Structure formats: structure tokens, C-alpha cells
Length: 310
Ligand code: PMV
Image 1 (cartoon, protein in one colour):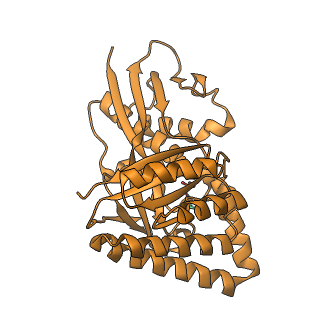
Image 2 (cartoon, rainbow, N blue to C red):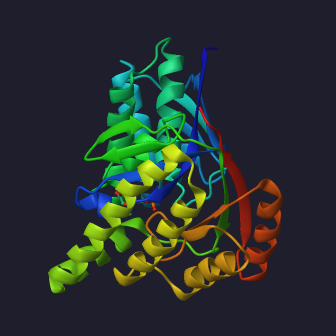
Image 3 (spheres, rainbow, N blue to C red):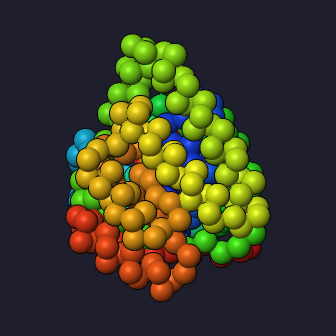
């Protein structure tokens, strides 16, 4: 039987979540050790079949919460010219769901790549982006596109209004990611900011504009490898994200614990209302210490990742 395989990785937004929805720039880094693998095989049945840790059955029978995956599968088959073919699709994901690490986008990108591979071809960047964005729209309405770009990028990116630029960094950066253990709904968080902005436009626009400046400034710090400056910007960004209503006491406690333990900076990452905190540290040795501190402060689990200089 024919087989196709594809992978994609998780991402963390370093600066600009939420503000990016209003056209601000944002910065994201790949989390290469958290991967999704997809495999597409010939299937001698009437209907496409999906197998993953969350679901096994036909494409038609996928539950509501997995509709983004169903959308990615249908869009990928159509784009590969296999619209009516029945295939077997296997998905294995190490990316936790609903933690702001881009799991829905990473699954969609892996499925798209595996389907293209199965068809003996490769989707270009825009085809891949188009498929992942279709799935993301089903997942949370009006996605900025940063997740769709970040899960397919090899290194750090600057993202704004749908376009991406690779972002060279001047020094390797080590982060500890701490999972609060709480699922945050991206759709709810984005809607919450929209409502707050409708009620208090001047205050929220000021915060969005400052988040935008922080992301812009961070692209320069990244180029210089200036960890102290990046850390200070992260702390301010977290404070502002709190002001636009997407932090929680659990996330604030994790940020405070990381900073008190000597992290250069820390902030929530992704849509918030749960999900993860990202802490910037000086070394892998310090990362181990800070990871322990974060677990003592309530993190359910932690990961350490180093973004290398390209
Ligand atoms: O929580 P995530 O990984 O889905 O991040 C969403 C980022 C937002 O800026 C909050 C929304 C968006 O569409 O960009």
C-alpha cells in the first residue's frame, strides 16, 4: 500500500498574542521537540478513516471538537487532487491540546504534509498556510494566522497581517515552558478582548499599541541576542496581557515564581485564560532549577527548549 508521512511542530508566541489580531506584529518561536506525526495510507473502504489517541472512526463521524482535524483532512485531500479517495489517516501528537502551543495548527500542517506526500507531491508554503488556516477558522473563528505560519517555520518568525519574515537571532535562547494544567479556549479569550475593547476602546487600544511596540522592539533585541532586554519586555507584556483580561491568578503565580527564581523574564504565551507560561533563562542549568520552581508553584509539567542561532 502507498504511504505518505508528514510532521509539524508546536510553537510558542514570544510577543504579540492578541495584539496580532488587530494588525500588530508578533514574534513566535518553534518548539521542535513537541511534534505531530501524520501518516496517510491507501484504504480499501468506502470512507476515509482516522486514527488518533482522541478518536478512531470515519471522517464523517468525527465529533464537534475534532472538526478542525476533519477540515484539515478534507482540505488536504482536495488540494492534493484526491477529493473522492478513501484513505487511512493516523495522527500521533506530542503537543498538548488547548495550552496555547499551536496543537490544532500543528495537527493540520502534519496532515497536509502527509497527504501531499501520499499523493507524491509537496504543498508550497501558501498551499500549506491555506489548509491550516481553514482548520484554524473552524477551531476558533477568526485566527490571525500566526499559528499557521509558526508551526511550519524552521526558526523564529516575525508575523504581521498574514505575512512572515524569518527572524535571525544573535544568541541561542533557552526557554522553560510551564503548563498551568488548565485548558484555555482561544475563541473565548479572543472574544473577551473584543468585548473589553468595545466597552473601553481607549484603554484597550493603549495596551494593544504598547504590546505592538514591545514586539517590534523585541525583534531588535533578538537580533542582538540581548536576553536582559527581552526579559524586561516579557514581564511588561505579561502585565499588559493581564490588563486586557487574558491572564489568571495561576498564570501570574507562575510568572512571579520564574522571575523570583532568576529568569530574565516570563509571560503567558498564546491566548491565555489557562495554557502555558514561557520563561526566558540564561542556561540549560538554570532551566532545570527554574523548571523545579515552576512545578512547585503549580505547573503540571514543564519543557525546556533552546532556539539555536540559524
Ligand atoms: O492560544 P493559541 O496558540 O491558539 O494562540 C492564539 C494567538 C492569538 O493571538 C490569541 C489569536 C490569534 O488568532 O492570533
